[in-house]
Image 1 (cartoon, rainbow, N blue to C red):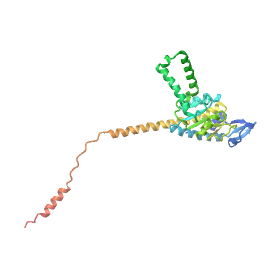
Image 2: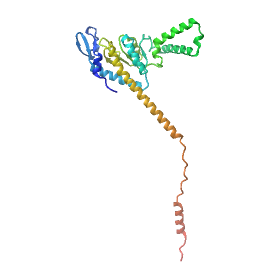
Image 3: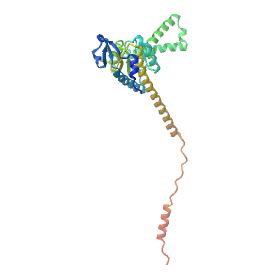
Image 4: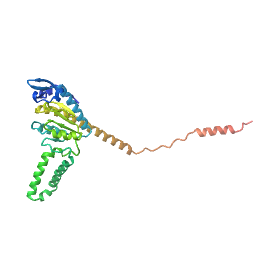
Amino acid sequence: MPNTNFQDLLDAGCHFGHLKRKWNPKMAPYIFMEKNGIHIIDLHKTALKIDEAANIMKQLARAGRKVLFVATKKQAKEIVAEKAKAVNMPYVTERWPGGMLTNFPTIRKAVKKMNTIDKMIADGTFETLAKREKLQITRQRAKLEKNLGSIADLNRLPSAVFVVDVQKEANAVKEANRLSIPVIAMVDTCCDPTPIDYVIPANDDAAKSIAVVMDALCAAIAEGLEERRVEKEKEVKDEAAQSKENDAPVGKKLRPRKSAKPAVEAAEQQAEEKPEEK
């Protein structure tokens, strides 16, 4: 897995923090300096933290686990949705559904309801309904698709949650903390890094900054998924070879050749017992 390039982070503006008066003192370890009243983030630490988070995500993807991406702010929505969809990971880019993690069974019921509507449309049941019912169901389906369509494949709680803006996605962070789900997040100089398990100190407002971090993390996930695919193919080949070997016909067994040793011993014994001629 390649290391994050310092120059790429610099070009994307990942080092720009917030105004000094808006800073959170707990972010002091990640601040390099202050310039024109704005805090500058130490990109060497940012690169290290991105690589650490990328390694975690790679291992999760290799193990077949899911990482939930959360970004509802305007400049991050499209970027996160595109990158997460490319690696087949669930994401939330609209309003965070309250209790999505802590009340996960209820969310799954809503997703199942959406699937039920799809089945009705597929088997023709939908066409037998009254016009008003059709309109209500269509609106309900559109609302469910908008809020939950991106997590339709999430059958169980995610193994980790990635957040772009800690302050905006405070509810998602709280729910993940309550369930002890690891949180990976882009944390700006105005945010509190305490509830975050894997802090990525970076500018969380610039689209380029968000994109460069997402590229690094999604590349690691893609690498983990590829390794998992290769391992699965190898297991299938090994099982097929083992099965073929077990089913192979057994060759014709040869009769063991009788040893001449007993006959020789019997002849010698007979010669000893025979009396000598005079």
